[in-house]
Length: 132
Image 1 (tube, rainbow, N blue to C red):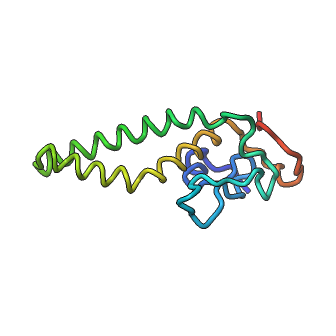
Image 2: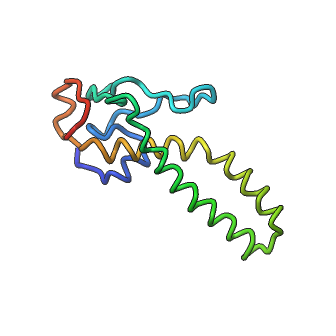
C-alpha cells in the first residue's frame, strides 16, 4: 500500500503507522465520544503512547473551531444580515452539532503528526509508543 498524505489519513481517522486500523471504536457512543482501542488491531501501535499525549490536540481543536465559528458568525452577520442575538443562537447550535467532530478530528490529526508511517508495520506487530 502506498503512503497517504497525513491529513487525508487523519480525516479518514486511521492509524498513522499502518494507515489501516481505525483510531476510534465504532459505533459512536455519546457517553464516551473518544473511545479508542489501546492498540491498533493491524500493527499494534499504541494509541495513547504516554499519559497526557492528547493534551496538544486541545489546542488544535481550539484553533480549528475558533476559525470555523468566526466564519459562521461572519456569514450570519455580513451575508445573511442577522442580528447579533440570532447569530449567536445559530453559532451555539452549530457548536453543539460539531463538538464531537472537532474533538475526534483534533485527536486524529495530533497522532498523525506525531507518529510516522511505516510500510512494514503490519509485518512487525511489535508495540510502538512512537513511530519515529
